[in-house]
Image 1 (cartoon, rainbow, N blue to C red):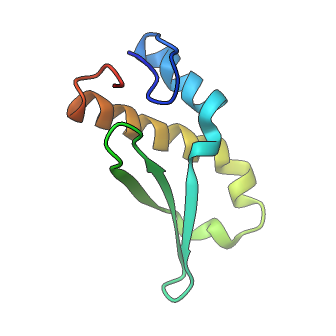
Image 2 (image 1 turned 120 degrees about the vertical axis):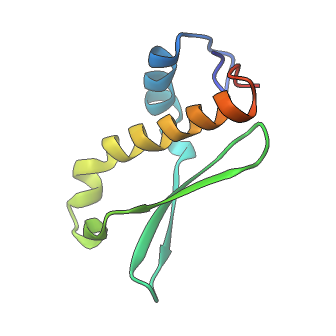
Length: 93
């Protein structure tokens, strides 16, 4: 697979780690204060599709995002890779 954000080509497992380490800044968050919810959001650079998923209710805990940020990025980039495989034929382009 090829990284959807750069030219790195690697097997899926290595590409997953690359995404977390090199492109973690591509993951954003949105907060709905009225509902008391936080979502992580990542946009596919290939089609502009948005992957959005609710973060556990503990996101208001000051240490939660720091403690679990790595795991949140791992899940988000895993979902992005599933999207790339499904919608773009798995090559990242």
